[in-house]
Length: 567
Image (cartoon, rainbow, N blue to C red):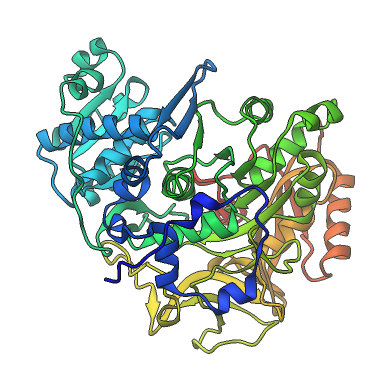
């Protein structure tokens, strides 16, 4: 391997750096140059995720830099430097070795966003094991399925979640983060006592770039979740997203609100920022608009990432509109990022008005990471409502049912051209649960449309597309239009069987607090969609509900709504 690399450029990224031209960077993308940008002369740092995200920063004299700022539910703040994480992760890594954990074994946590979670992640990577997230809202069936599939060796959890493992602990070593009394009650290892007895040093294990360091599961909107083993090669793709889409800079105070029990939080609230050597923020408290506002003010957050649902909840709460001038004067946001579902114009305008920054929409999957983005650090035109442009290092196409590439302006399935995507790392599901590739194409299962400017526009999942009177209607288009009604907080659209049209469209609508739906509201919503979208896409039926069924990662479960419509 060529070792004539330069110092990593991320250290030189300043608050005033001008965006590069997207087209120039995309067309001239070079993987060797990217690896040089990330790792400098220490190219082998990419062979261990702990080394890439922590160890090299300590070695290179940045150990005193703050890696984590954590605020618990009582507003107590804990700060940990890279050097402190280095020591703590060595102790937990030695603890894992004492349990017999080997290279490639699965280690999990079911913990809220705490320093212990981050320490376990780094410790797992350090010994070449694979970190497996377990979301705190999971029940028994979800846990058993994932642990059985992955043959999970060790689980770190707390008293609040321990009872979920009562019938699962026989196959797995359990470590309790909490009081010694609680650990004795369960017969578990006690985290603090056990780690404190361990050595504070441990050499990391070097692997190869195909070796997994994360064991994910898809969110399982339909059927059982599929395993996704994320290889070390993904680190360069994570960097691309953090550096050029999110535009993470050395002086940023970065807060990704996503839970690390899921891909967006684990990839881009933990791995991504630490890879760049930049502080990440954990807010242990559950989401609400007031807490979010106050957290951003207290910590002077400059760069944030969240979901459209969170932004809509902020908007509908009204807490940012109250004393607007006073609040905006206290905010420090430079830019915001959104992922998980389509970001509509109403939310974009609200963020620009009340948070006083630009918000960019970005698309990805558990399998692929982010692949299509509106980039903060790469200059390109990107109309509101689009998914953005292909992430550099990725070639995207739109395919018809016969795997033919469609021209701009026609809807089809989004696919990645594997041989032309040097930054693309997904190679198939962990246990071959599904064939994800056809020839040279990775099939996303999402229906999109490419415009002549190179931007992509999301229509919906392939199995969510509604065909009514011969027209293909993306539920997202209907949902975003319904959201423009002043009374609407959330919406979802599904197809309902119809003898004449094949399907008609039904909207499930959550209204804002204090508003009661009636016939007039229904007619207003229908007319809005008919007027703004099309006459064939308006919902012939509108049902007002108190909440929409969602996966733990916040995606609307339209298949459940379709089932309700048939009941």
